[in-house]
Length: 104
Ligand SMILES: [Zn+2]
Image 1 (cartoon, helix red, strand yellow):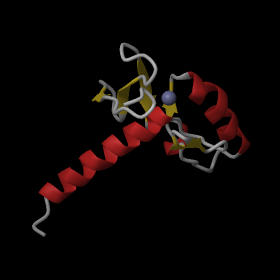
Image 2: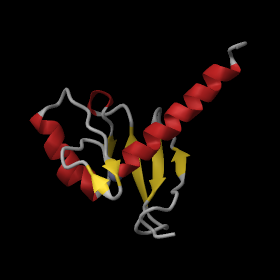
Image 3: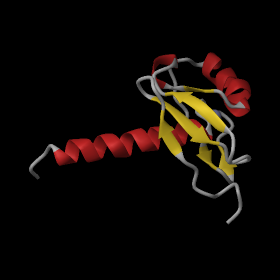
């Protein structure tokens, strides 16, 4: 499996809705993600977020644009791949907790 398509680890950090997401390029490196930043768009410490995603966010702060796919990144994205991984982690954990509390 190429390093671009492998599964990366997402770990919960100390603060609410903050995560450490493993780097695709260097397994020893982690990026810090805060899902509550920028009105729910989220923010990340990686270069893609700082350069591309922030520039797109500033053009239209009310719009959240997902990363896309590794082979076809959305050029208008406001979320990097680390944010996408953290949002998926958060959604899956939340859905499981909601399901466990429901008698359906
Ligand atoms: Zn990132």
